[in-house]
Length: 136
Length: 328
Image (spheres, each protein chain N blue to C red):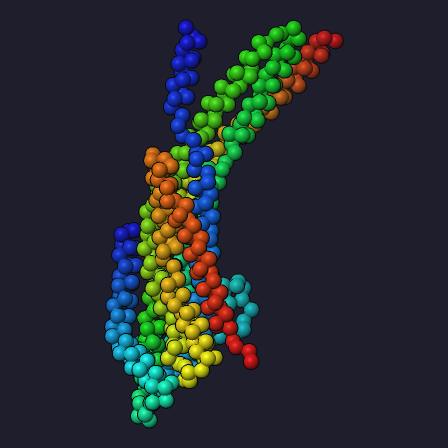
């Protein structure tokens, strides 16, 4: 079962990475073109047709990024709901419970010593009372 | 003969309990616990930043019907208030976003996703924090001190008891003290062995879940950075291209944004976790027998966790500031 959980998680990551890589093949040339045309615009050498091309490239980039956001969102939701995270939490909580048990064992040892001290103290009081009664 | 037998049994018992002191692990375990808390806090802050960014993106997308919408999940019954017998019977009015992609692909963004998107990952870091705190609690347990105090009392009581029974009784002056110290030592060794065994067993058992958490964190890092690049850090990512003029003020603004984006891209989300797990591995090796030699780079790992957690917390704060509506 834990291996299944691990495989499930890795599958989500792989699917996401593959989808993002595909989208990046569209994103990269758009970004490069936008960079070139933005430089031209800043230097005042951009032509009207290039200015229009820049707008189109920016719109295209928006669409690609929207797609990337959707892929990212779906994969984040799937990762967050994955059995792997539940397995990790339950495993660690089990270990914490074991440590709590050990702490309780230690507390019990201290408790036994403490009660023994109280009992012997009570015995001393009793012995002292018996002693004083017998002396009288 | 009897005394010899008792001495032999005592020595055997003492030998079986010796060499299990946990004192040398006090500082490493406490430091590990502190680092786990810092890492957990940093992840919680990043979760909040991602939540805010997700909501912002969903709200923006919902203003364009081609990109998304904001609706109530059960629109037919929502608003028809009928006093429910039990809270769970109430007619729910859950608003949620539908974000539409190319080709009609849809993703639903519910309240959980825009308030606590990495909720289960935060639960993982909280479980690590709890485990580390329990490890520290067992190590720092003061049962031996409590038992020593009780043994002192018992010893004094026994002397008083003998004297109460017989006022003329005389005890060798060093005998009760010597016996008490022996009992304390045996108890002390036993308590240390209980603590050591618990620490060793727990730390070894935690290796597997911690390695799985490391893998999960690595998967989340790409996702979180990707989503924040496209939302909260979007303007920063595009700042250098967006400069329409070449003036000092716009260049300065773009420079700050571009540097903030670069810091964000190199935010050590996964390395922080790698360092925490690496430190834990060294602690396990030390508990398994290699002693302090395994702890050589332990504190270096934890110092890095501390620095990385601070870096992540600062980036999360910057993201939150970037998402705040600008007041002019």
